[in-house]
Image 1 (cartoon, protein in one colour):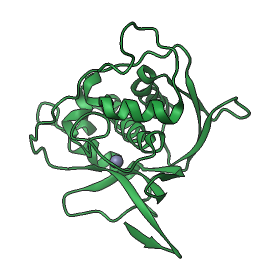
Image 2 (image 1 turned 120 degrees about the vertical axis):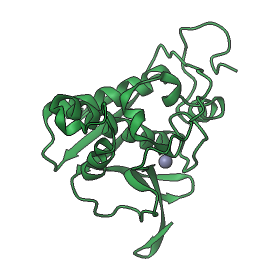
Image 3 (image 1 turned 90 degrees about the vertical axis):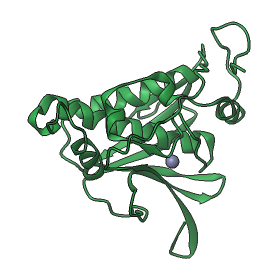
Length: 228
Ligand SMILES: [Zn+2]
């Protein structure tokens, strides 16, 4: 919590650790909602960093694929789209307005809360912080910088997955974290080397919270749509 101006704001940031701690992250149950109708969220992207079109495309595709199982569809810079919600995503090199980092964690992306249940309208992401996470990855003992194409891929994943996590804070309207899955507090460098759907899943309680906030939607699967 950081005091800024005349009101308290809650900084909810995705942490990262630069060291390969080997900490095991227990996968959440792979409960999946397959909504036939999407809940549409417009994201107005404001990029002040020199990111390549490929990195931006990767960022968007990571967010899309993490949220697609829950029936959330994104309209990127979709002016005039018929959407349920609209948020701004600011991507910058610098880390202005970033929440204070602890000794072990520094924020990759963050969203400010106006109160415990009122997320703000802007997600911010730091390219510098994402590059540091990518720089902590080791590929056969070598830095990703030795492989420019791979470095770019990892940067897109780092940004996309951290933004997907922050999207979770506003869609769930909660600053809370879970032990595993998308809403875990820490992503490790090695997480960038793989995509396991369980590592980016919502747990059953989070799925119920999402449904409460966005409304029930028809699902294509049979049985309990919440996967309980
Ligand atoms: Zn968080």
